[in-house]
Structure formats: C-alpha cells, structure tokens
Length: 158
Image (tube, rainbow, N blue to C red):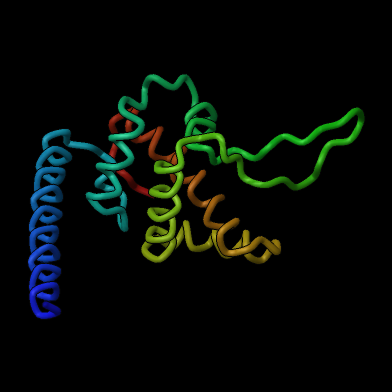
C-alpha cells in the first residue's frame, strides 16, 4: 500500500511539473507578443513581467506613478493625529499583494544585476533601513521606472 501511495505521489508531481512548464511557455509567448519594454530591464524575468503586466494591465490608466505606487501598496502609511505627524511609517498593505510581492522580488534581482540599484539599496541600508525596507524603496523606484518605460515605450538604459 505504501509503494502505491509513493508511486501516485510521484505521478502527481510529474503531472504538475508538466502543467507548470506548459503555463510558463504560454505566458512567455504572450509576453513576447506584447513586445513589452519591461523585458529590457536586466535582472527581470519573463515570469515577473507577465505577473506585473497581468495585474496592472495598461500602465496608462494611471495618471501618475504615485497612483500606480499606491495601487501596488508600496506607498507609506500616513499617520497623523492633531499636530503630530509620524516621521517613519510602515509600507501600506492596502494594495495588490501579488503585485507587491512580484515587485519586491524583481527589485531583489535587479539590485544584484544593476549597479545603480545596488548603490541605491546600499544607501538605504546605510541610513539604517532593514533589508526588506530597502527592497521596498528599490521596488518603488523600479515601479516608477517601469511606468516611464511603458508610457513612453522606451527601452531601459540607466
């Protein structure tokens, strides 16, 4: 009985693996058909581009990068009470969590592959920010760049 269960589990794993490969091939074909300029960013994968475009859709539906940033949930929470304004706050959790995760993951890869982003990340770390806080800042910067690239249809050249 145990051998049957093990064989069935292996077959399921192989089945799911082939399904994942098929979905990745289809998403690659769709992204390539879009001729997205986001693929010109070094360090960003086709999976990340397909997820980001899939969630955002048309970048031009946002009138400014700040509104796109808020949609992604990368904007800081405003904390005010009377005359008090907080100097440091957390990242907002009101945006699209899938988009937020893909942007932070893409920012992590781009920090490894781009000297400008690495310098920006290091400057945030030098300011005393945590790793994920610095990645959040890099993701915000990446999203502003993506907005500009998609709206103006120019390739990445930093």
